[in-house]
Image 1: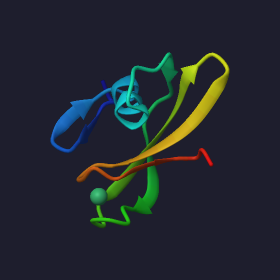
Image 2: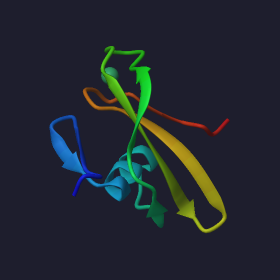
Image 3: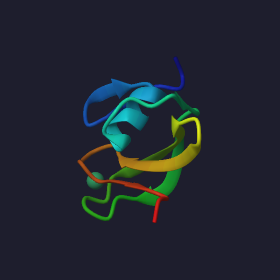
Image 4: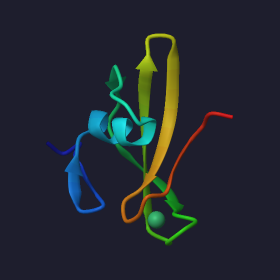
Length: 75
Ligand SMILES: [Zn+2]
């Protein structure tokens, strides 16, 4: 599964990563990509995943691979 990435020492799928960011399971998620930015907290690598928490919403989420930092494109 090339889509899987290691986040804080655990292998995650796109949907699992999206659930970590959202705080609950999501309907669907796109493949994980490198965000090409550094974590503001620890300087670690940030990855990004687009996901649908519901049928009406699409969110782009960001997560550091090394610490708890996360963000979304929500206001
Ligand atoms: Zn970090």
